Length: 145
Image (cartoon, rainbow, N blue to C red; front, side):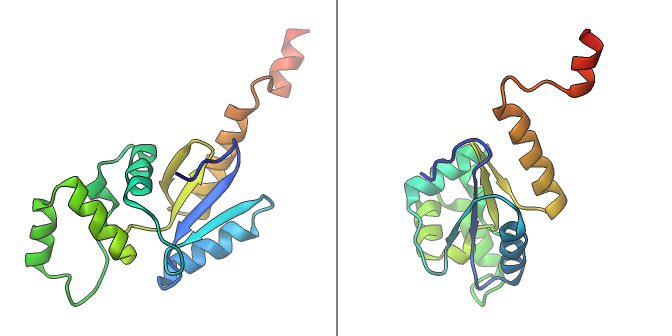
């Protein structure tokens, strides 16, 4: 799986999706080291997908993009997705990575769906506080004296 150090950021995206390209641009504008995984050019294994779902604390079926629009995205096919077991879903996503609900941010040991730049900054700042065990709020330090 993609392992990150505290405050290290990885973006999983698909460069053929317009919203994913915007998210990539925003993430790369941050003043931090960013690793990217473009699913249009790189593959992700079933094991990595299962671990990603675990990091996101979601069932595997929640990894499928509900807005994915393709000629095969009919009511019949959506119903068929509900009948698939976890292994079949992982294989389906692996072979058709556009089905993965991207962009996904892995920040430290956590992963979550990229929503907005604001949410990303909030999560990044929270990760920094969690990763700095000896950090003390300046205001709290003043009140101790």
